[in-house]
Image 1 (spheres, helix red, strand yellow):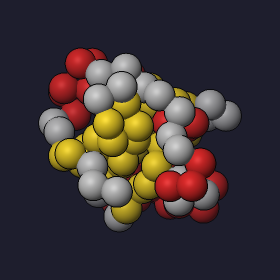
Image 2: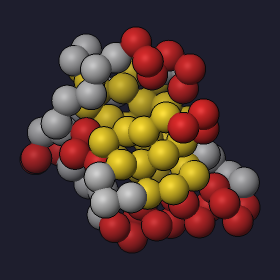
Image 3: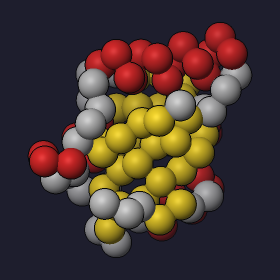
Image 4: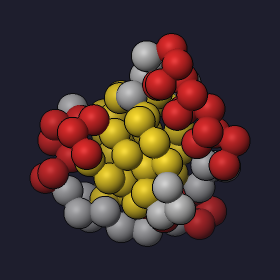
Length: 88
């Protein structure tokens, strides 16, 4: 699966869709690691998610994770059900 790297500011141009179940590699430990990396070390992660225009990837700091969403800068929420992968 090849995801197009986009700027995080472009995220508003896309509609989130559920990620294909067979491609999802995100686990709770990865989510928590990304939050810790962002908050304690001010480091960024690559987040891959499913959109109406195919898989997209952004490089950004993860601020928090809730039961249903991952939050990045400017209050942008990415649904957890759309996440395909997180790398850091």
